[in-house]
Image 1 (cartoon, rainbow, N blue to C red):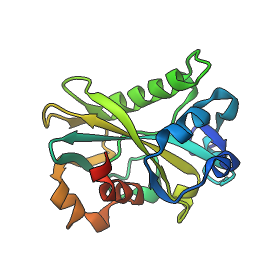
Image 2 (image 1 turned 135 degrees about the vertical axis):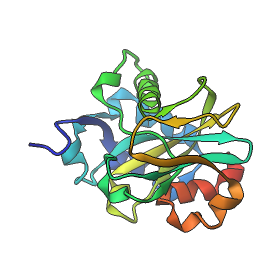
Image 3 (image 1 turned 90 degrees about the vertical axis):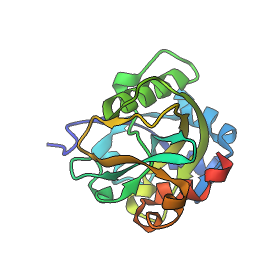
Image 4 (image 1 turned 180 degrees about the horizontal axis):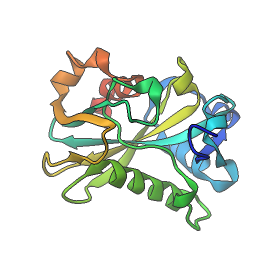
Length: 204
């Protein structure tokens, strides 16, 4: 029995990223990558258990960051989270995999992707209203086993208040942290994707 209960996740071949221009860390050149990566002819749903151990494919992961002024929503990944290799690390990103339940009829693939973004946020946090958002960056970290099989798409949500509540135990100690805190005492406790984001906050 799969530890992921047969979950299927949206992936694309690693070779596609290499063709477009592989990078390590964060890039803000989203328009160069996004249309090609989301094109349904370039991606498909794959068994997650197989995908987690196959660096020949990259799983597309929405990574949503929530900002109010110079404060960002921060949490610590709890043990009930889906990725055990990230437990106890600090994170700014809310999100997860795109699944077949998100699939929509759209030749560009954007509708399927955005449906997955909305579902993941609704499952994980409660907000007073749906804030404005924009895609600001892509994340890639080939320096560790988790990063080698994932590609992050950073969404920045601009909030009108600091009202946010966790809907999952996996989001422990959910609270807003200042830019100074994230760049200071919390920095070394962050997962690599969040460190990349903190390093680039002035670009968002």
